[in-house]
Image (cartoon, rainbow, N blue to C red; front, side, top):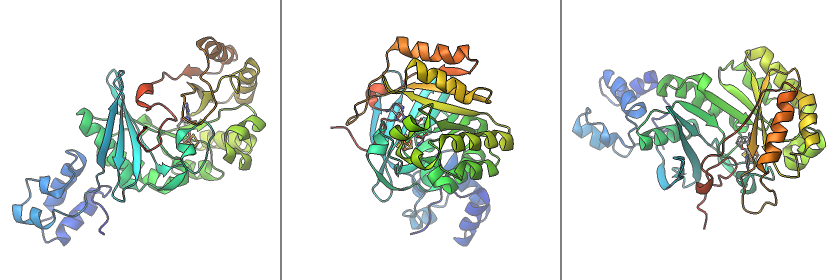
Length: 338
Ligand code: SAH
Ligand code: SF4
């Protein structure tokens, strides 16, 4: 089957249009209809001659089908999207004041198996292609009737396990869809060599590293893959990233009551990243099926945060969005709950 039109540049679309025996300027039209108007089928391009539209009607634009849409009282909307091969992924649209943030998936499932994450529990199917990442943004944009201003790679999957498609998507999101790189965040649990590789692309996007523990022993209990990536090596790679790109790294820390949210953990964390150009995001655990963890109480959350602040570590507590739609961090599993 032909590779989809979504994901192609203006020049590539113009070449394609010409190869179809149409004048080259129609490439510019196609580009606008694909990226700005968000067409799902070539039959929608009413500026094209009707006969040609009918001939190319079946060719793939590269859009998914919204299989299910679930909205939360706070305005967050979760979408279950069906891809061309039938695979299901999830995407979340999160409106705040003037912003519209989209939380995109990078894989169908995830191979990393973190113990507190619904995606990790569901196993791994495949990487997403570039156009399948772009599609998620156009879908949210179309449904909200509002431009997406911010984007986080925090949906299903580990972005650095699909680096090439993710980097390709970032370029297109920037050039073709118009989202500033500085408004994008790539979140990773950390993969050996890959942070270094990512730094080589010199992106302006923010790198967020999912830390979740202040020492190696606890970290590898929570994140099986951490066994192969010592905390020291991970932090040293983060320092190199800052040096190479001039961008800050942020650390994500999912707080699991009684597991990694104790006073001593906060002190240890402060010690670990002191003097590091960074920012810590505390994420209260969002409950998922088949896991024994608990969400921390407000007071212990505040205490954890205060210890970091006192140690001059920049910290914020991530506001939970979309909890009742199972759209919050870590709750995406690519299937409807019964
Ligand atoms: N694979 C990448 C990006 C997707 S996960 C990564 O792990 O960084 C996005 C964020 O959600 C990560 O920081 C992850 O640790 C966090 N998360 C996963 N499960 C969670 C849960 N049940 N509650 C709260 N945060 C969770
Ligand atoms: Fe994968 Fe991230 Fe979930 Fe871990 S937390 S299983 S890396 S999606």
